Image (cartoon, rainbow, N blue to C red):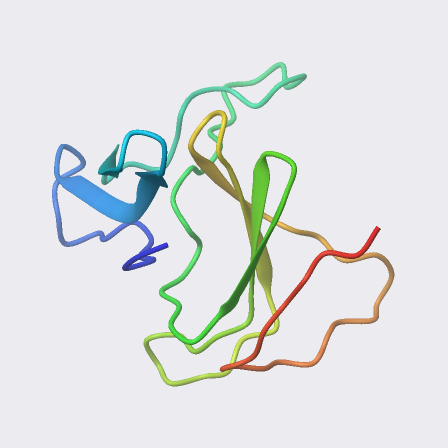
Length: 122
């Protein structure tokens, strides 16, 4: 992941953002994934109304941890643009190039942290 940035309201929706790069080791090539500075990809599944679903990250992050599981990449913690340590998590689904927020069960939130490591168990 590189330059994790959300939608920028000061830029037009047609502006190109590249919040990530993908390396294909077999091809020995680095690909830049391009997103429009837009909020959505269309309707949420199962919704009757035109509900837009975000595809860009929710916030700017640096010093976050990252782990992969199946076709998802989990991004946790870090520091945002206001120098606040984050306790939120997002996933990036590699098959459809989409970021999504992770909702935690119950009222227990994880501790905010930055500059740490993560692994997926089980």
